[in-house]
Length: 125
Ligand code: HEM
Ligand code: HEM
Image 1 (cartoon, rainbow, N blue to C red):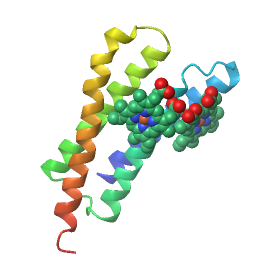
Image 2 (tube, protein in one colour; image 1 turned 90 degrees about the vertical axis):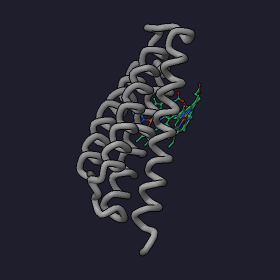
Image 3 (cartoon, rainbow, N blue to C red; image 1 turned 60 degrees about the vertical axis):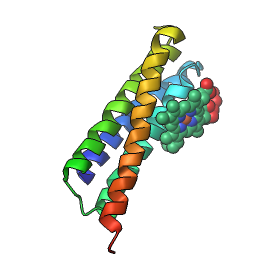
């Protein structure tokens, strides 16, 4: 599970940094919220989950670990695509707001599931 998380983390880093470089080069910082969340939800949070699996969770492939992985990845992808469309002015806020709300709660659920995994796995250590 650590490999899956770290590989997706670097995937988000490539996209987020490319967006950062594009903003810097074009002197148009309109996508800075998208860039920030690509780096923080996409890269940083996925990377931290990967480290948790490597360091504490024994790379568990339990049902809970698999669910937590997809909950985080699906929530992140939807938030990041939604932010890109919103800040690129491809859609208006009213249209995308409910999508962003559900995706935010999904990412939040991923954090809670990771906490449950962590508590279960480290209880007797
Ligand atoms: C190639 C490297 C990078 C470039 C060219 C770049 C470029 C930018 C630019 C142009 C902005 C907008 C600044 C503004 O208008 O306020 C920005 C904001 C931001 N960047 Fe990057 N960035 C890079 C790497 C990173 C990394 C590695 C992270 C985090 C892991 C990061 C996190 C952020 C955050 C959180 C903001 C929002 C800051 C704020 O305005 O509150 N960036 N970046
Ligand atoms: C459920 C997931 C999240 C939601 C719904 C969310 C929401 C938001 C919102 C609404 C803003 C203000 C954007 C604006 O300037 O208009 C923001 C900014 C910011 N968030 Fe998040 N956030 C989430 C996750 C995270 C995470 C995991 C981190 C860090 C690890 C983070 C770090 C930041 C930072 C540094 C800023 C300021 C950057 C900026 O000016 O764009 N966020 N977030």
